[in-house]
Length: 616
Image 1 (tube, rainbow, N blue to C red):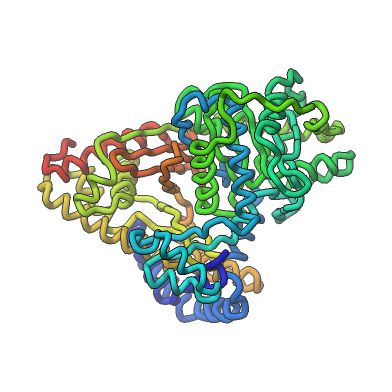
Image 2 (cartoon, helix red, strand yellow):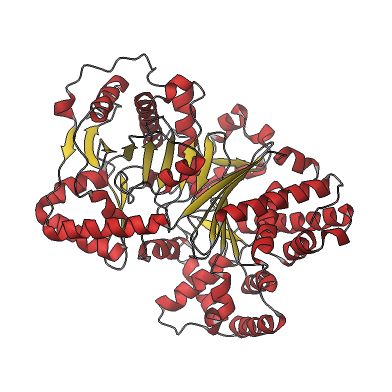
């Protein structure tokens, strides 16, 4: 927390900048008539009610210097949503296998990852976790010398010291919610619950719930051989799966789940639920190996609904073959906090594993130490679980996932061409959608604003007049343009995308600002301004292409479901020499065909960059 006190505050953009950026993002999505109407709504908003709301937001922000203007509204947005957290909100990130193959044994990996996760918790709680910093010039700032010096700069000034060497410390306020935390269903708005005194781990296997302590009374880690013994005991338990698996309830509509949870509490399950909610985290042990990347995605994103507690801040899932992933609830935090934890657990468990495949478990009496939780279920609860299962199964049947590994090149080649790798990936999605459906649609790319105190995310809007022009050239009339002209258009797209990315990371997008103004209007009981009733506003927030990128040497792939029923969920990463893409869709859209179009777009762009002509 060394930098936390001196982190800069998330800026509220000027209203005229927000309106200008909003109109630029609307331009490729609207015809001239629609655009003129939207422009008029914007003008009225900017000179009327919008101006007043903006002034109120700025005044309110001045009164709340300990946080950011988006933090409250963003928690509200997540916690007030009544849709199931499964598919609609929770994403997953899958680990690469342990480079030493014998360490991928399920028991070995589960023990090592659990111990590494608890080591992370200890480091975090003892105030010893190194601050997360974004280094623009690592040679200067990511050094022992700098770290030794900055230590002596007091917290109230430390950010400026980092800033001088082009390093940007990131907000770490979300980290405390990683452990001992759960989202509790409540009528109309959920609550986040954290109990950092609890010392037990929750383990799910075959829909059965087990708990045992992983920290002793003094807060020290229980010996790895003991943890190994308890996990071995759980893996060898021959109890059948419960007839009514409780975990299904966490996949329900939040109001229905809130009501059923009340029934659970009043039927004598209060203590068991408390154990589930307060557990350090949830470890899910699956009884089958993973067949391929598509199976991996389905299993880590949703599974069969019996062996996950979807409300937990995160579930660490380990399959029979050692395939592992983190599945997380999204209201409490964003990718940055989870990725840091994920990277540290991978690094620690592979480089300094607590046990080896040859290690013998301790001779602990697990029958005493490991407690199996039993739940008393009334008929109403059994009915509720059955209904949740039917809904879950029906929904999961509709989800398609497919993935692509484009091997022709990646970051290295594109940087040599002076192009932003992210811009090229996004351009490929625009071309693919145009080829498949003949139009340009609302597109969302998330960008972290963790460089600011209590920052969350901002939206990059990758669909622009530049990507539209470039996509139409490549898809509709490639023969009419020389390779040089196509390269020129790609360079324009790259430059503009770079500008949008920089603006978003600096808190200068338009989405969060307009969202906060709308939230404020609702909170003040003001009638919704017409800008928000404009069909174009609804359309740009109906994100048919929802995209997110994460790359790290620890990540095999990540994924999430579409955010609208006629959309795609696009997780992607541009690696050194290849590009990976993991896409989900519902029945109205075809993920496999979309990926074929993405591949075609990437091939075409690489051809153009190599001066070859494009095949129609």
